[in-house]
Image (cartoon, rainbow, N blue to C red):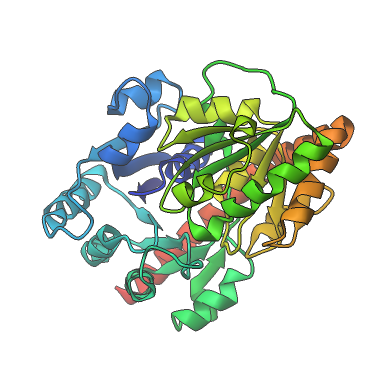
Length: 376
């Protein structure tokens, strides 16, 4: 099968889906943003660079596109080029990984009437105080859903939610779990774990709850004076959270985006990965931590409990509770056996799920192709 994976926003997600399908013997084309790839790929980005670094197998063809700003009408010309390239590539099924508010996906959906299409809703509804307006999220997902043959969600609880929000019949929404194998492909140099290191990684938005990890630090330090928190983040809430720090010596802060090899380094160094989110759908950061075999402390919000089995692959705590967050972190830092076991369980789960996920995608693609044949 010739499959076109489109991921303008989340490069790791796109590489993960493309890599899984390629490993199963399919011919895969990954259409992605040059600007997004340039942030992640060390040493300069080109199609060839993905193979030089071992990020993708040779049966995945990468197509990079330089977009204008999100709402610039000039993007329509680029989207038309992508559609034309898909036709030349002989794509049999298009898979759009749609980020909230990404108008480029809407533009492309209108072009793809001649190709069976599925759309993954990465964040089906806005998180707390999200930067993307709720109306835009609804417009983007509602339009791509209406123009696609099937919709995919990555959380079991999102199936009913998406059916209700976007008025979709039951047979048009499919649940497929997240995978995370691509995260380890960034690993260029192995590094040892640094004892007592707690990692917060990703976007510092209000709903990510970084404030509560900062507030937990004095509690953690009273029990484990050597503990330190590494924050690698970008986003509108970072400066506010930094102003709440009472002991700067307990923090290591990296502001802005990091390349993929730097990401791999940070996750290797971490003893624990913290996800103190206030609201969530699923989480690529969580899956990355699990792929690297790291114990996680996460809040029991959104779809996170579907992936974090409390006491098995991580520890769940209530949101907005720095005391319980701190105690869970202390528990793991004081118990090497427990921390190692949870991390290994998480890594094993990722490996086991990979084959299952691939089969689910294959069945989903076939169903979308059958629906498209009937409708068009």
